[in-house]
Image 1 (cartoon, rainbow, N blue to C red):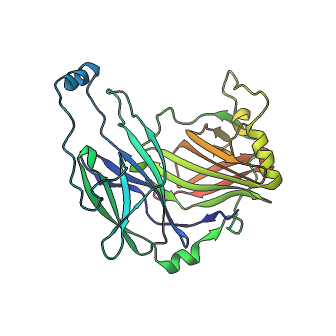
Image 2 (tube, helix red, strand yellow):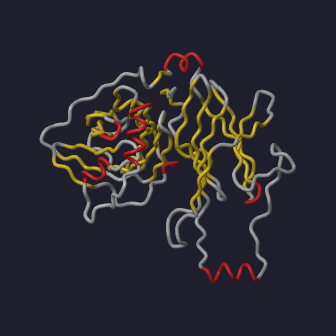
Image 3 (cartoon, rainbow, N blue to C red):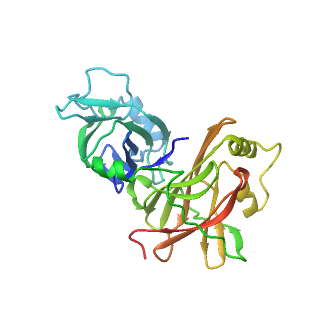
Length: 331
């Protein structure tokens, strides 16, 4: 497994704000092998109710006229947001990565339809003009110049997760364990700000847990955790994700959250309280040689400038550990 901690390339947040569309950077990481760009685009919420929409259809009222194509070819197979970058000659290179989408809230809600994409761009340093296009909704081609780390910094600071520093402690004893978290919808992470660098949270043998992103959105923290394992620990992790029969408990159970998977579980620790949280989203996969899981959690921001996490991945054979994560701009 060749997982690496790259160099944060952007503080995140909204970089395009137009009536038709907003686009924000969720995460941007530079490595010698390329630039990883995690983007989330959101359209405005359609405030029409069902009868108003039907009336518009009967009246033949359609959306705005298509925006002109200048960098896009005259015809392409896209039907939604396209993302690319410009080389020194001004030529656009359109990129395609993983996609996920949400239809958004009811017309009386808050969030409109969204698209999220993770793109693997070639190695780029110093700066890059990123171009966005969605002509079908009237969104004009928009170029945003992103400042990036220089090549020397990226080559010096990129490190394998197996060699990265590991600073952990034993959990306090005793601890009061409970299930908690914020009773809110998924926060608008594309409008937040990165407040901690990626770091290894737990590691033993060929299993590791990595904090890949910590984003502040108002009073909430969005936490992305990567869990990876190889060989015997991969087989154990896969077996832990497919128990024979394990229905969820009828009441909140911290022990269930700690062990159910996929991947590692986390709790926020304050004084002698450990508050376990369910992931908002998660994905996992692998085989008997390599396992990988990604999960996103939502926590309350700490009162001070340090977030203390209790990290557990018993199915992969990792002991419970506590990690103090400095949180930039808090306190």
